[in-house]
Image (cartoon, rainbow, N blue to C red):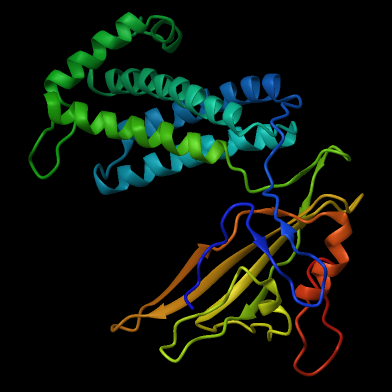
Length: 316
């Protein structure tokens, strides 16, 4: 049977343990913590700094084109990561708020980068601009917009003898803006971590445990994820196997009451040219491990070691 994900809140039997029941998917509580001032102030300062750096890099980047794509990618990732870090450190458990801040600060940072870009462009290629200042431009969006229109009309860089202007340049700029703000949005609202509301702290992600995935005669992995007893007794993967089942667990190290697990299918394939590709597929959502089931689930997921009995479950 091919690998297939569990449906949300689906019932499954576990052989040898009384654990049959509805599985509850973990969701962040939506609490804000102290994120409003932390994300707003810290994120705004970061947005201006990154916008300043990006604006100057755009003007003085000697390799316009392909390199610019990586600048945009790095800009969006850096901004989103910093916003996420401020939210994480201030115990924000509200992905919607973090996504909103990712978009808002992304737009603010993008405006800052435009101001710096236009200022650096004028300083580099124009004369008699001594009276111009970054602050005067920053507080005058009308003047900034007029400069943008002028640059769009004349263009400012060439690719293989072609200078983009007009609609083509608007398209480039629109794609750039969508990438920066979009990457900041998705990075800032990451929901990978688990929060313990009782201890008011983030839970630890334990070392993952991987098992050798059984395969059918055609070499395709097979596993009935509706029956987790299939995992009981599987050999642990040692690394480099083509198909493995990985269990990611999170648990609060203080109270031990908040715990989750999630299953992944990791595959390694080699194409005709000998190129190796690694892929990861989510098999289940992040499920809550209730305290009354914790010991039973640890017993089910503990693999039988090949040579010694010293191995322990990831939940130990």
